[in-house]
Image (cartoon, rainbow, N blue to C red; front, side):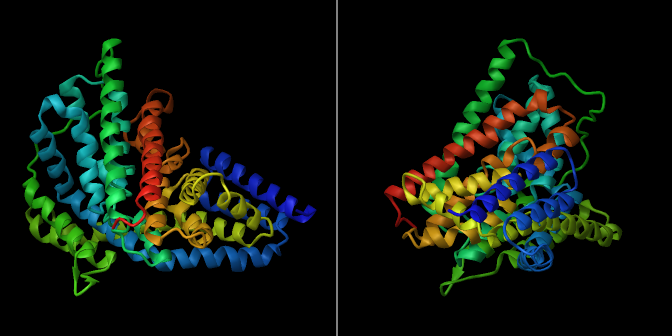
Length: 439
């Protein structure tokens, strides 16, 4: 390894460290991505202008072009579920079905069902929070565990499960040519382990807090759930079920509809079936808001992916790939570790996948790993270190929505959205190593 490669490698490390620090300080992601890309380019033997004009913007635009309609239809679906109170109806139905004695796990289950149906995790959290507030108050559970319950249900087992129309399935599918149901058997087992162990840990943490005298203490800003008229929960579930069937069922060996089409049909069905619970005069405004949200969300992810594209062009990057490909142990473990680390650095599972899959997958495929195993393992692995404190979704839910501090609320979030997905990743690695040919 020559001096130029060493300098490039140091530049990549410095760029990644700065990326984390600047994001955690709340600096705009677009500024962060360009600054860190510039450092990586200068130290990586790249012409700065070409690195930003060609490499950076190529990565940015390609991700935008490939994934815009997936982001858009998912956001519209979420907006329809929000304005019709469909999401609240589903969550309320699940809470009522499980009863007060199982109130604690009803919140992550409600979030998981909505997230698996393709509804944006931000929309799910905002829709379920008022119900979580009511449930925790009635059961006298410590309020600072609400963020953990919400984030566990939204950003772990459901988000990366086989068949979910989330971007975390779409990105590997597009790059690897797989279906979103890839690695179904091992994937569902791994996600099931996450669900079960996560619920057990959540119960034990809350029980310990209760033993220590913890109670529900409302915040001055809390507005408790009002018994406004909600649609039937089963009717609200129909669009989600139809969407999942459309994008996963096959006719003559071909999937009925692409992800974007399936989710858009679900949005239309939500509008039609729950029409009596919304103001039709506001529909254009709601769709406009969804478009604005989509542009910001996908552009933020594009900025992170574009940073990865610049990293990929440096002379030091082959050293990074080689070190990850040659991690001791099974090859599938190397793919998982590489994805987890990159997602953690980005503070984004989708952004991490957007970088990791095109950069690392070819090397691991050359080692004989099936594309289905890569798809599912990398998807599950992306859900671990992405939930570190600087993750935008974690910050929004903890501080903005729930009005809790990281000091009071992050430790249970860490256990449920970092440790549990790491456990799920380990299970996936073992299953794909022992049973690589399962469907």
